[in-house]
Amino acid sequence: MTSHLSLKAGLEEIRLGLTSHEQWAYMAVQDIRLRYRRSIIGPWWVTISTGVMVMMLGFLWSHIFGSDIKNYLPFFAVGFVVWGWMSGQILDAAGGFFQFGGAIKQLKLPLPIFIFRLNVRQCIVLLHNSIIIALVLLLIGRGFSLVSLIAVPNLIVIQVNLTLLSIVITIFCTRYQDMAQVVNVGTQIVFFFTPILWQADTLKNRTYLAEWNPVYHWIEMIRAPLLGHLPTLNDYLWSGASLVVLFFWAVYSLGCYRSRIAYWL
Image (cartoon, rainbow, N blue to C red; front, side, top):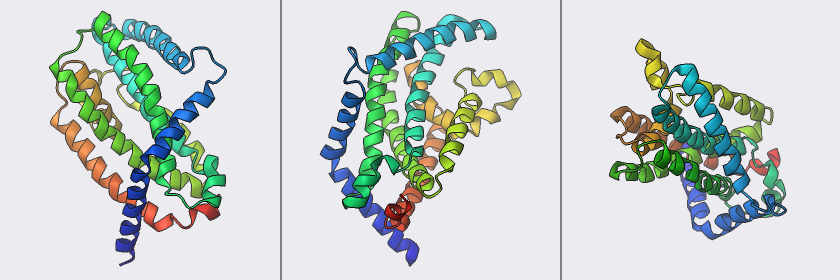
């Protein structure tokens, strides 16, 4: 009975958060503007620095692995940009609700709006960085095709996964403040264990190390169509399964701990 009430309360929180879309979308845009208010080109600095890193590391690692630059650089560029978007949301979530402590203590607002705000902020950065992907695919890769369009709905699926994961991480890190450092270190470890710098086929008979990594399947849902081929059935199964698990976990956590978060801050 308690679990049922927690799920119901959590669903209501998410519903209220979604209906407040004008509020969190506006705040996300304002966050970007305030962050770069004294900069001439604003968030484009992030795009420039990411582009330089993609080109430098792409050429370096293609030589280290002995791979053809025309095959390796598009693979790396898409994976690196998508990973930056994903890790940005996870690291933002690790900050917990502390950066919004004043508002949470004084106003009765749906907690998901703060998560949505952080997520939209990272989506704006991804929108800028997508120019890097476009340039690499057009100038070095094979360009775009109709298959590339599949990346759009897949991107939405992965965004929902990340939003639900962000809710869980934020609540967890708000309750246990030291866990933010664990999430930061864990994110770095996941980066090296995920086929971003290296390709899964280099594992040969140990490809299970990649197949058991849900982050790999999340990236492939977007990277595969952009590189001209369909995601595998495993990619869809892992993404769908994680969506179901994270949905119930996030909804239950919201419903169960909603009233306690203000006291943890």
